[in-house]
Image (cartoon, rainbow, N blue to C red; front, side, top):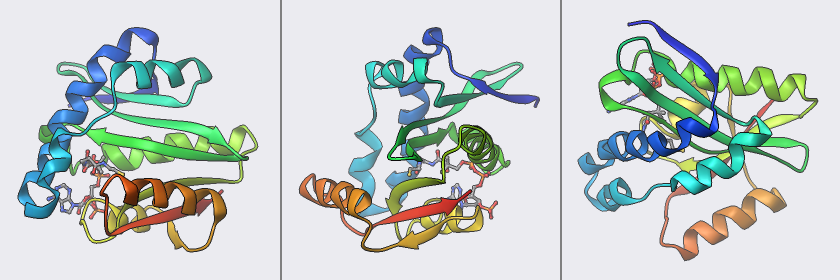
Amino acid sequence: MIVAIRLATAADAEGLPDIERDAGRSFLAIPDLAWIASHDLTSAEHLSRIPAGTVWVAEDADAGLVGFLNAEALDGEMHIWEAAVRRDFQQRGIGARLIETAADRARAAGLAALTLTTFRDVAWNAPFYARNGFEIVEGDARLSTLLSREAERGLQRRCAMRRRL
Ligand SMILES: CC(C)(COP(=O)(O)OP(=O)(O)OC[C@H]1O[C@@H](n2cnc3c(N)ncnc32)[C@H](O)[C@@H]1OP(=O)(O)O)[C@@H](O)C(=O)NCCC(=O)NCCS
């Protein structure tokens, strides 16, 4: 397994929803979150952020694209909209490498932090991000708005997190 992390190109966009769908199947193990397995970004949503240089992919020499991180510069910070790694490639550090790549590029671009919203009590969500340098934040205006919008869409037990760079 030789997995390289690189910037996504427009040609990668159509393959990313498949990775997300496969990764999301991990949520089938959590009965009240099983519906997350069928929720994902469209290739158009990926494509829209690729030109800004804020989407990265993990590519295996044999298997092709196996993961991605989709982010956007917002208010001087890099917000991670989605990260996903194909289940047969999970728990080998690829997610952590995608985060480090985003952190390096965000720092080089003069951004102050990485931010995201995620599930508080899912092992591969908030606890995973905490191990990768993120802290739970309360009361931030931009992130609180995102959490409110998520709650309107039925997402519960979410939290906002920030990793200062
Ligand atoms: C989150 C995700 C991208 C991490 O990718 P990854 O390549 O497995 O990341 P890493 O190998 O660097 O670390 C995975 C961590 O999840 C933890 N984990 C715990 N239970 C797990 C499980 N059932 N399945 C996968 N990971 C689990 C591992 O312990 C590991 O942390 P550690 O190595 O620090 O102990 C991947 O799990 C994924 O695609 N999940 C589904 C989609 C998702 O939830 N995305 C995030 C939305 S905000």
